[in-house]
Length: 344
Image: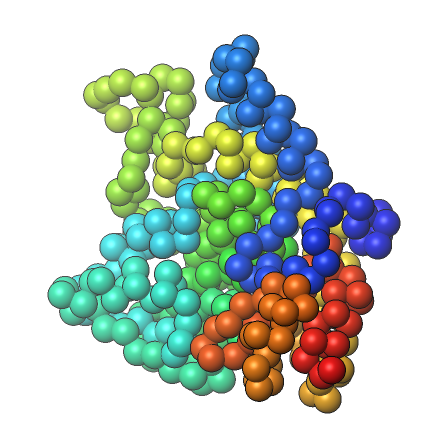
């Protein structure tokens, strides 16, 4: 199905240009979540059916980023999934990051300063060069503040040449930007933005080449090889796959996540990319700016925040500039509404 034909699955109030803050759920997600809430209210079912959504979502995410589902762990937020990775780096490790990157991509490393882990922040354009002289390169595939897209393949090549572990936050990319997670060692994604899921679900691709270095610090019953035989202990028998890093899922959030990811699959990330970037470039052109390569753009127009708000356009302000972000449910009318507010 093409995107225009599918847009009836969403019913946004015109002017929502803030998917980089949170995505809007498709009808399929709301339907499944509503049915689950009714079951919860009446107590007419057990939880195992809800948990099936976690497995559906894991499999859908693996397909979207081109990896094996056995190499995907599920969690709640990006920093929680990064934590065991950062805890595993040796004392004195050198970590290179992007200056101005999102805090959840930086803080998990910075908290280890007391054991000599150093953090060097470089401009995005210099990341590939800096990655050649590091133990870890950690960066967002798409920058939250302004939508800049990292040269993923080039950074990965440079890091591999220097022997650095490659750790990527793809939260602002996954769902609109095609990429191969397998180029990196670790890729973490919060699902509540471009994957249009409830807040509280996240994924981590953990490559088998590095996974044994990490300790599952939050291990519980859901990380067991057989979760139903892991309610009590000892002994501890953790899964041999990336599931050993799972945390017990918040059922409601995962019931809404699985169908949302399946919608992204149905529409196709390549088609979503074309749609989103076309709208972003329409917006830029209307302001006399050159085209870009991102679904997230920032502009510096005097009084922009107030003018957009007065027109009913919901965008964000990041790093002192207005940030607009475009996704499948947006149309040219949304762009034109924003342009009229900024240029009228």
